[in-house]
Length: 93
Image (cartoon, rainbow, N blue to C red):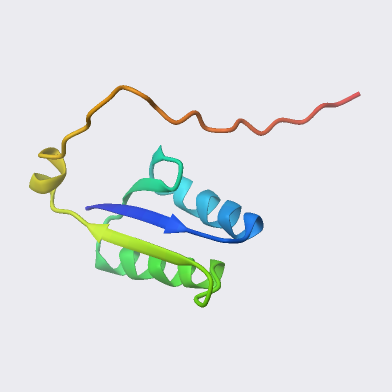
């Protein structure tokens, strides 16, 4: 199942933690939107629990929109812009 996850996180560190968590589930399609793939309801529950641990529920918000295979295939994408993922790297001297 594909779950569209959108978030608004106030703190930079928490925002990075959420983005890192979600990147393990699927691609970032907008600056604060991921299309996450989960195998079943248990994995979805685990993702929700992990997100709860990452955020401050009084300051932040995360929205999850589970989709069916059919509804996901019927999505519309207007425009060609893609989000470039930041590549972390080390400089060794």
